[in-house]
Length: 339
Length: 292
Image (cartoon, rainbow over all chains, first blue to last red; front, side, top):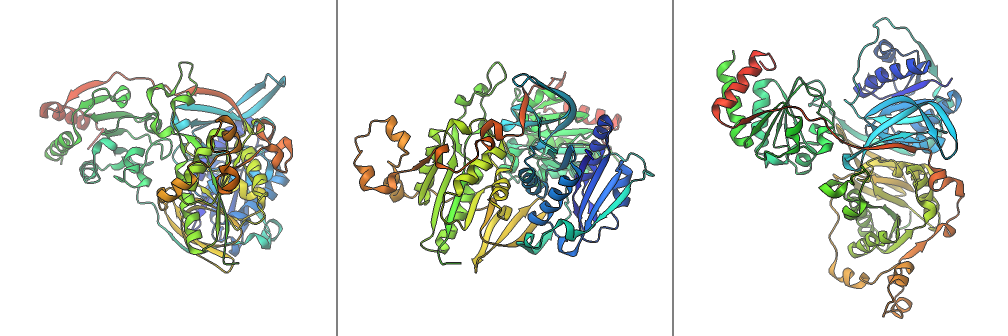
């Protein structure tokens, strides 16, 4: 009872990275609170889930396995969580800020009247004093997230309602195996007890889900472009540099909005958070919302024609020049002086 | 399903957080709302377009636009009328102040119950001032309706069912749902059609009762003879509700603290684009095994 739950997002029997990242974070928070870490997986043919998650420190894994639950739809998955949370009364429930988590989380929070904070960038445990009510609350979940286009960071708490719910984007937390031999128990729940027949009001007719080709989270080097790159064609230069360096290509929100790069390459508060050993920012002015997603990179090189670009303040190397001029020189030197 | 549809579009007027200037933050770290222009939430315009396309498909259907906000939010209702919506409804009052997404969804769901018949509720996936994407699904839950989020296109609607394409992180999904239901529309969906010149003329003087009181209008008679110019305004008294679920008391989440974002500056090495300087940098990165 009153444990911390992580909702496991599962595609083709594989648990999503964002869920494993949340298990790592959840384990730490559960230790601080002195409670157990529980995970809930919903889907079809889920025999392999335990082997994937126990090593992250899961104490109890609940599984609802039913052919009708093969693909995610809002109502039946909501019913499972609402019923389970009603029985188990978790203090905290975490899920990925994916198209699934952002569909499921609000629906569950509405049914349980428990507050939900979307897209948290940090989760901490702390106390809260409500001066107006003269009440103090201990060990609340601090749900920390950017707001107003990234110009402010707000700490949100849910003093009265449980579970305290939060979603977190992929790549924001780090996943780390706790112990390869960690043992937890598996509870197989009977789908019939958790899902209503009337829940199947929406059916999936067709699906084309591709394994993402872009893996910014794992890339040791990222060459990233902003609006200043100027065009999708000029982005070709960035791909060339990334190719010779063995890097991945990222982009700012402005570049994605302008159609220079795909959305899955977006780095920042509304995209992926990265911490590579080298980050080369090309034509990126450095809006807060972008910087928040890459400031932990070990070395940052900023290439910008504007010597006053805000990104220069957090860069280790500032090159004042255009992308067309600088990037080919980097490619040329590297090709000539390696191998 | 009948041949006509009753469609409700939920929309929000938001500060334009994408174009935040230097004066958008006050010295004390709070947001200077006055410095941010108020705009039609972008994805709500995508939602309006999908609603208008349903109306194109089922001639005689009604598209009603519903927004909760201050008196000024009537601006986006007029904008919707110019672009093709039939009726506008503003839910307004200080009882709604301080609402988080759950209290907002409760208030909107109560207002939606005022409509005698609703077949489809359409809204943007999320609003740019909060980026939470919660209100659509929560309204659906409050009304006991199914939801389909991340909609990019309505592919078909017939026999009491709707088929839509969803745009997800790593692909697409085609799903079919039974009406009535809630759709939340993605920014990747078709852009909203522009203002129609005739409609803009027709609805130029469309106003809420509060707006009419504000400005002593020379056209008072107009609002009796042309009913379409009256934007409906609902206060808390016009919706069936339980006050404890509204505003602050209906909001489980509380803001504990707000900080403006400041990054610690690094001491950086300044270079020009000269060959020698780029070469020197690349050499350094190869030698210390950052690259290569």
